[in-house]
Length: 357
Ligand code: IPM
Ligand code: MG
Image (tube, rainbow, N blue to C red; front, side):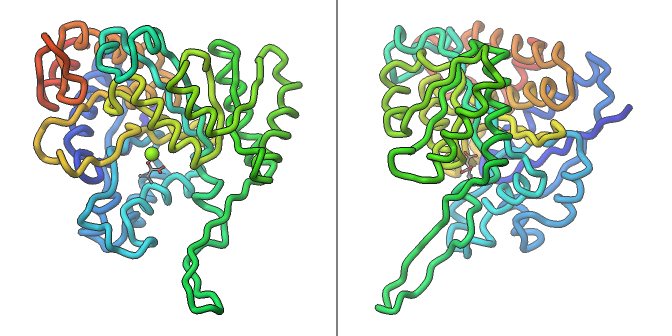
């Protein structure tokens, strides 16, 4: 059976890092005889330039038909002044919501080789292995009404709506409980239930689910405390489940614990396990086109794709082992550079992973 992977490079460093991930996937495809076929499409600013839309019909069509998607990054200063509905980010958000990719898995794992690249003390982060489960198609990112309106006073007011239905909370809760069952059996649900009703309901549903997963130890934490605990004692966490915006913020924070956001992959899944796989970092326009970006988060995202959407665990592990090997070899892109290591470009890093496969 042939399976299709859609490659969406996007903007900024996107094309550079996706090119390296694609080479790795081609090689893995041969080595494990996976029968994958590859397509590509436009999204974000690149799509705006060509078609005037951040998510052209052709891309959405291909995305719906694909078994999995690898996306680089979207956005950049060139498109920052466009109205909200036409911005590159809408391409990404449109894909997430159209395919109902509600479950965003963001593992923050510290490679022992990179302990010194973290801004925290090695003893605080060594052995770190957290999974953030972020709700991705609801919450304040998508709540209605939203906009900027004029009040009677003549002053303008910007507003968004933070809303979750019970079923939205329940389905992300189940993903998180199940992830915890596969790991350290600890789940921390992050909310702001001391202020926001929507998260009072969130907490109630998580408590409800607890009964179905008696082997998982559930705890709750307010988001401000969670932000603090993540830098104070991050190893207390196993799986964290939270809403869209809190998850956006906490996953960037967790990424930095691992030394660089350039190392963090992610998976966004729907209930059919169809998924989109992207690095957690953005398009980094400041370093785009210079060949210095770290392709490892995208390469590791490709590994997650093999695991979660394509059921090819061995191939996924092979990529992860290859990444670990190049780190052992002392190869570092600029973002994870440390004393005594060998600084390499985006392409050299990709080639090294290929060689290590
Ligand atoms: C992320 C990004 C996106 C988000 C942006 C680019 C819309 O920050 O994937 O974390 O906020 O979800
Ligand atoms: Mg983010």
